[in-house]
Length: 467
Image (spheres, rainbow, N blue to C red):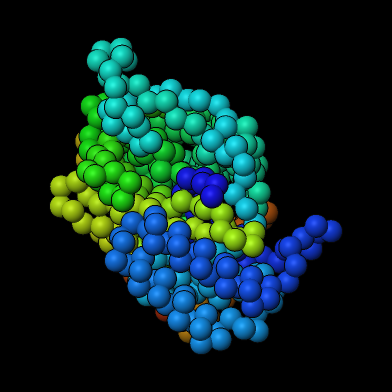
């Protein structure tokens, strides 16, 4: 059997598993009873040989054999429908999201590709040994990809998506934001990571968003979080497999391509869709108390996966390791990674941004900077608040002096003056943020007789309603 060791995103796995496949001229024939039996028996044999827990492997294999004997697969001649049904049964016993079956084959020569050297101490995919400068061992590893470094069929091109580093931005209050939608390791990813982190290195706090990240390369995950840990290598995860008598201790990476920021306030955004290597990323930073996790408990895909050819041109994804915290032995398999601030995933960015701004404001010694950060926090908090009632909105709508207008548009209050238009965001006590540097406070009464514009610099403008 041909083996290819990878850790693919769950989201990507689902895409390539259930997407329709065009029938080529040399495509395999539709499945019959004999072929289905061969696939199931080959799948069971691989499970019993390589699955991380031998006893569990036998139980899962028994589920498949029992389903085959019961006739559960008898009407499934389409390869994709059959693969989907078997995948559901593979996961039915213990919910292991890395177990899968899909049509196709593992690329031959999959260990090809460029060799990267990185100085670590027992890091991911490492082999012990001396010989590096300063007594540090040198890790030689090959990047993930197909033969000769080509992408694996069915996966998106890593460069097209900037290796998963899809968005870098400086938010109000000088808070850095990096969205990582996948740990898509391929040649060039280290340069892309360094460029993104250098762009953000002068920020005063950092938010890393893995809410849409289904996983990928553990090496790339280690590379990113190592930028936020001390230069000394730190134990990160313990990996247990049936192929080695003792668990492997993996550590943070010593040499990182971008700026190292071990002290910057760090927030990680998670969701139920955060899986696999993205969970490892969150798990390590959470256990080391290096980051505040905001959002939802993660998916619970805590194994590492191998892809193996089984009969009749199918590929089995099988979990070959268990991963745990070196200190406590805790795992995230089936339970997910817990968060520090539990909020709906779509609110996580606003909540983390507010927390970062308030933390920076508390630490600020310059009064002007403290005030600016407090106003920025109010602005972000206002984005997270619901609009006022219809009665309250109606009270504020109207035309005011100096060609100013407050109107209702798509259920939101909008301030207009000439070509300028801005949504008013409520902050309470008849106050609304107009922008991070200005807010409006309406007077009592129905309709409101006027309002005052308060600015960050302390200046005020009083505006009356037009008669």
